[in-house]
Image (cartoon, rainbow, N blue to C red; front, top):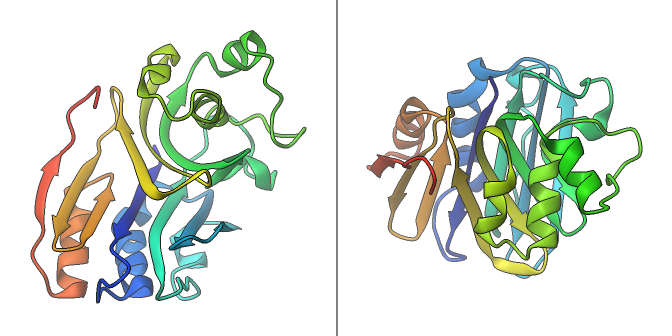
Length: 214
């Protein structure tokens, strides 16, 4: 079990970027203790990634998202494949132009990478999640590519070739919730994480669980 969370904000949203990230991280903290990380992107800017070993407490007081950020991805890891001692195995994971986070287990990652002749971003990487983002880079984020993955997933990613979009997908066996208010969309593995965002930002979100296969 891992935890994923993040947001997509309009550039003029008054939401405090760091406060929102801290609230989401606190909301998913119990879902992973092996590694923690986040990525952010400002309007028209590149994606920055920070990763640390350990649980959410290792990052909670240090997380800092620029106020001009429009997208953020947050992850806590309870690893299944790809030892967390190797930094590249921890999330957010980069493959080419794509940076993403994943909760679940992909069973045919090595097979897919071999089928398409895709080399891993880092030679020492073995984490199964990379197959998701390698496929999305190859397929230009075509969601039909996700049907080739066997296993469980809830996932989110950013693509440096498309600075305006945050991509979200839910397969089977892993939860994904979204909540929105004017100019802001938040997502998380649990409804509780969105409730913490509501309390921290003193707002009310229209929340719903994403259906499997969306």
